[in-house]
Length: 95
Figure (cartoon, rainbow, N blue to C red):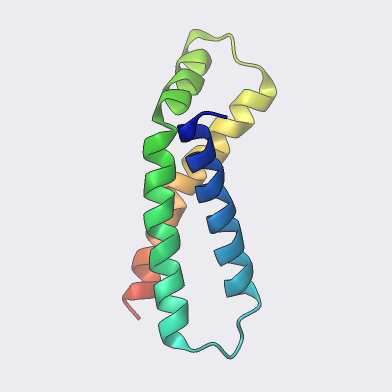
């Protein structure tokens, strides 16, 4: 495996684990919740930077009209996440 592929996989696994920890951390406290949320935000930005080439290819495929339904759904979920993640981070920090 290439180094960037390993890094991408590790970032994805880290985000997954942090999300699981947040889901089941009822009594962990506000500091843990804030730190984990900011950590996920940072990992999300890094993840999108590392996958920018794939994202550009996905949207150019849609623009050209050659995208299948699964690619269109992937692009839709990418758009929702790119818009939703900053909203979640900002609204949580501003409490």
